[in-house]
Image (cartoon, rainbow, N blue to C red; front, side):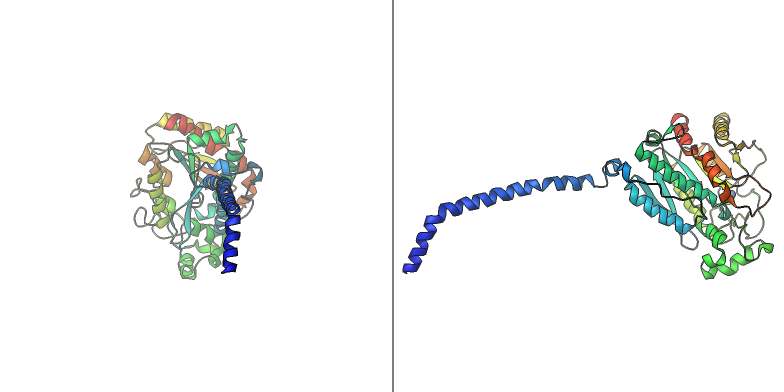
Length: 370
Ligand SMILES: [Zn+2]
């Protein structure tokens, strides 16, 4: 009992001190919790709805795309992942469908979503230099957007904040892969049919291949005078329009996506000829021709004269008919008379010719096409 009594005595003696310690611990906890708040604010800064420019350090970004190579579907996927990571929400990378063999069809947006223009390439397998060019545009435009740099006379951020760009860099990944890698690049179940539909003298070489893996020319698939449009009668490496419009998943995906985003204008990249096609019974003939003339001056390409007997079914024909807005086809690389000439040799000069085209069209769309 004595011991207990003595303990009680000690407790009583130190009670004020214990109370003081308790108060101190309580106060310290409050201070600690408040000290934690800045971390919470930082977390809020990282939330996806905040401005991507606040998150990206302009000194720590770099250009990613190397267009001076045979640029494959795998390169495209790899670079899109890197771009998506580096630009932390500034770029929107979206899947708009799948090719016949199951490759993803990608679209990438930079700038304003509501008002936009569309730039697309590689409807045709052998014309994949158009993908090199479009991927370079995505890469360099995003870089300049963050750093505040100009491309040519164009302030990238100012322009794209008004009218953004949706890019579809590779409409026909199966055709591109067949052209670049031959039968080794595609699933075995398609090897027999592509051999059957290839240009006869080319045998197992697909250097002339433009179609999708089913032997349908995706750029003859659109519902704009499709019935009357020129066509060969059978599945082939090029120029077969299919049994009905939009029979192929790639053209259907482009059609659906374009109707969804309703671009103010469209630029399509193909190869060979260094010309610009623009005419398809345009209702705003003089407006569309005037823009074409400026594009001709910018690129050094010839503006192709209107042909009233032309029957369409290509993407641009449908676009002009559907939206009453202008659309332009850019044919990269001069005719050389040799189909086996390396298009890559022209990458540098075609970048110079075309690097301002997307910005010019966004600006024009803002001023004249809204
Ligand atoms: Zn083409």
